Image 1 (cartoon, rainbow, N blue to C red):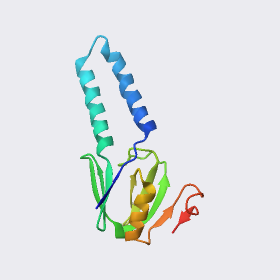
Image 2 (cartoon, helix red, strand yellow):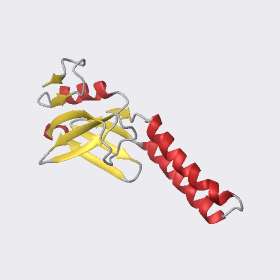
Image 3 (spheres, rainbow, N blue to C red):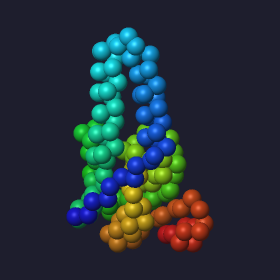
Image 4 (cartoon, helix red, strand yellow):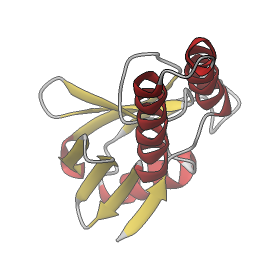
Length: 145
């Protein structure tokens, strides 16, 4: 079993912090305690999601976890393709430097492992049929199949 922590996107985290801190300013003077409490609860929840997002390979299974919100178990044998992406679509990824994992019958999930190449290599050792598509052509010849 190998655990791959999620990469934390400083830009994404910064944007969220700016929005939350910006929404706190109008409720600080005079203090509106319920609004302050809600903002702090949202901040703690987001930090919890950032801290608990990870991907684990256990046998022939890829486990994707993002707090208690996402717990997905994917059979690595059903993975068809992995593509680099910067998609803004929501997913258990706390960075915009993401991988789109296509598996099963038209299913996909966005993940953002810190060690993308290590995770991809690990998955391909289990399922060598996985097609890998990189955004730039300077990495492993652009497209690995």
